[in-house]
Length: 127
Image 1 (spheres, rainbow, N blue to C red):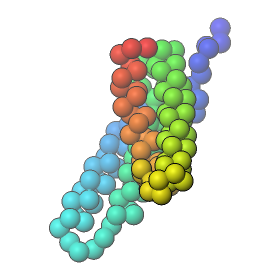
Image 2 (image 1 turned 45 degrees about the vertical axis):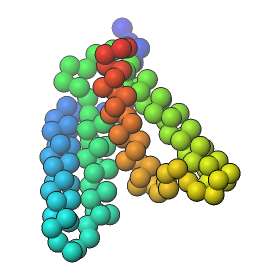
Image 3 (image 1 turned 180 degrees about the vertical axis):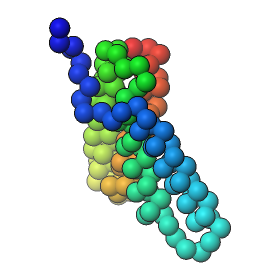
């Protein structure tokens, strides 16, 4: 019997641990950046985005239909929310002349992942 929700190209479970290790490397780079005058902000952002990608697209240890349903549902909500945020930012920039969040691609991606992790943790309890 075919499942309703297939695992849509997700990484194996151990990629979460790899992602947490890469995120730890990014945090160490951030603290190194605070102690020296050399700026590693762009590297920090790219390493953080890579770590969030590994963590977000790794399967759960016991993947079932409910967890796949929560993942697909949260991804769709986050996409709609971030499109709404970009449109709202553009309208505020158009009307008031100042943006709410000055969106760059890196900020947009990091905010999307943060919204995804928060929504996923809340949705696991309510869906």
